[in-house]
Length: 68
Image 1: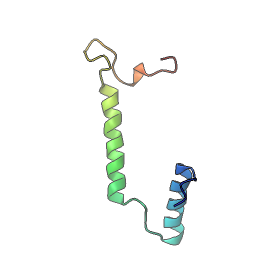
Image 2: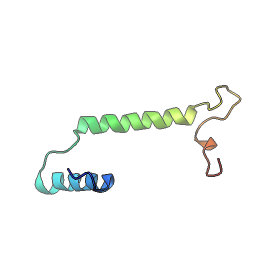
Image 3: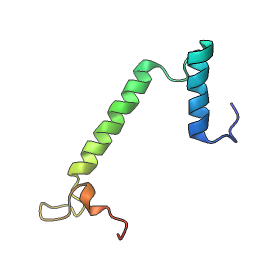
Image 4: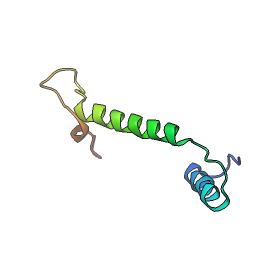
């Protein structure tokens, strides 16, 4: 696979080939589902993370702003 191509474009092309030409998928359904579940778990952990280490500190995604 050509590494000079943007990753999202490469992903879209691989998907197109799977659908249009019956090529085998690059990632199995099981691995894809595991990746989505992991990403969801990471987001949930960030939502509840106590950035200052205590209950009175900053918590969750609200502490991330453009001005930070």
